Each structure stands twice: as structure tokens, then as C-alpha cells.
Image (tube, rainbow, N blue to C red):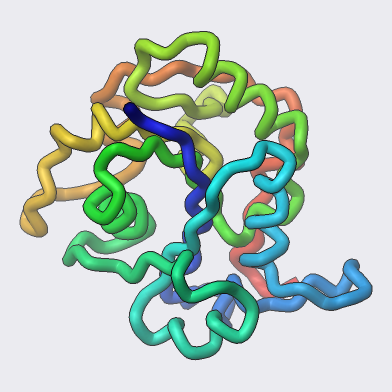
Length: 188
């Protein structure tokens, strides 16, 4: 039986930002919490077990803020954020994942609620994602274990979340809170 867990993606290179985005401190909070823990907290109202996807160089600085047992270190040669999801699926093959980028700090609770409700109400889909009339918003989406079991992991193949969502049976959600999808790829 599958269960739904959260997965916060932090394993990127943060080249445009110039610093590890997951560790940027959210100055709007009195305790100046890093973005990755701020994003994990967004899943607390849904009582989901939450994992943090990182690359091996991030382990030491991240464990200052979060239980290392919740870390999933990138395992594949796939470039980009899909590596985090595939690594999580490899370790937890019976788990469906709600994937969030660590820099979607404007993500609204209503956006998450609608996504999770769609997943619960329409269980026959492979993926659940918002669409902005041009492309999918893959870093606030749900990916099922049953669909990921059939995903080709070959490093020589071209991998992208857009291709994954286009090829699978994806439940398309209309965006009601566009501010939820502002990702911060440039210094503030």
C-alpha cells in the first residue's frame, strides 16, 4: 500500500543564486529559519512524513537544522531536480511523493490543499500537477510510486520533469494562487 510523503528538493547547484538556496535564512521569521525547513513546515498541517533531498556536499550544513534520518542524498547520474525524486523513489519504492522546491517560499496552503485533495479524490492518475497554460509546475506536484516504477533511469536518456508529466497520465490543476509558484532563483 502506498502512502504520501513530502520531499523538499535542495540538491541543486544554485548557480544563479550564488549560494545554497535551501540554507538561505528567511528574515521574515523571528527565528530566521532556513528556506528548506520553512518549506518542510508547510507540509506539517497535512501530517506528512517529510524528506529532504540533498547532494552529498550538503549533509554537514543541513544536519544543523534537520534530523539527518530524513535526508535523501542524490543517488543517480541524472542531472537536475529529477535526481532527487528518483533517489527518493529508489529508497522508498512504495511511497508517493509531494515534491516541493526549497525556493517556493510564497507557496500558499490553499495551493497544497487543492493538490492533495485532487490526489485523494482522483486516485487513478500517475501524477498531479498545476499547469500555467504554457508548461507544468513540477516542483509543487505529486508523483506516484506506481508510475515511477516504470521510469527509465538510464543516465544516457534525457530527463526532465516536463517530459515526465507530459508522457504520464497527469491530473492537471489550474493555478488559483499564482504567487505560490514564484521561485527565487536570483538573489533577493
